[in-house]
Figure 1 (cartoon, rainbow, N blue to C red):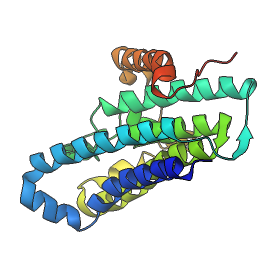
Figure 2: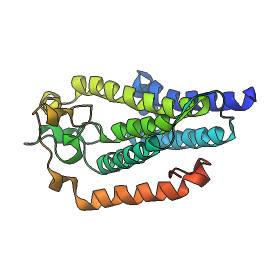
Figure 3: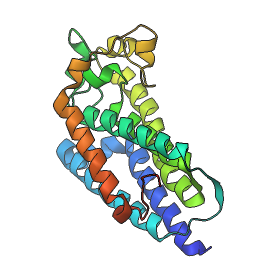
Length: 231
């Protein structure tokens, strides 16, 4: 295995993780003080996109490495279903308001602090990323995939915990919001702390999620070098 090309992927993944972990520390206050909130948000977004593109390029260039598992058949259909759900939740939540998003603090103080996709999970986008990562790891157990998808999935999962911790300290109305929501999808609904209201999901948001899902299916061979459809 060409070690240099594989470690290129490891370094790219580490840089992507560092970009998201370091700003959650005290350093974020210094950066926002120097750049301003808007400047920090722009710089963070540009660096994140650049690092993610670097990861994709490094993933495609890296050798698969040792294969710990590889599943086909039914597992591929499970992956497609999980991918579809991940994109519906992730995209739908991304274009909706959330107390934990920038400028969304007032949502938690409203009469109903959790509506729409927030009834399913209080971190729709990050939950979507976790499901997306798990979906890929079900069928792909080569070392390259474990580093790429595992790294993104672990970052998203850790992000839900870190955001909860920060919001608990800083967000007014957090206790009300947390009491009727959950990190794990549908857990608050199963426990009777909330209910699913399909009308709040909005058909247009679901439609956008479906379009993104189809676009990724068609672009997958060009972006990742593999065909996601079974057969």
